[in-house]
Length: 162
Image (tube, rainbow, N blue to C red; front, top):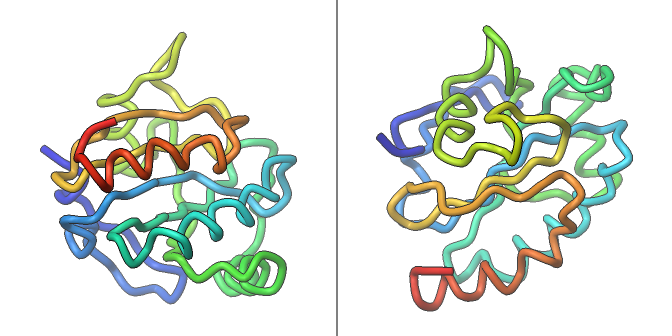
């Protein structure tokens, strides 16, 4: 099983298969508009712009499970991301990333790359790094600034390993 076996609804309400990003290096992130880590959108956008022509894509999944920090509608989330951070990478509709209603993609991600103490995602902006074959290769904590991931992105794009 790989991330390509899953699909999710976009902010526009269209069901999109993750297989549409096959052969790309992915960074899948659970996001929120009212979080202390929200400025990471800027760094994620910079990474996307820098490496998208080499096959790198950021996939954002807003989540309201942590402190109610993503209360907006799909239209509000899209407007916020665009207006405040110039986000052009794909942003999906809100999902749960933990618990009984966790989106199947996030159940897979946390199973493949558990956290230090538990598989469960503990906060917004947890990041999962996926290779071109759809395999989860690394998990980054919410506090990991996107700039700290750049070297791993370069290595995976160039050699296929980190």
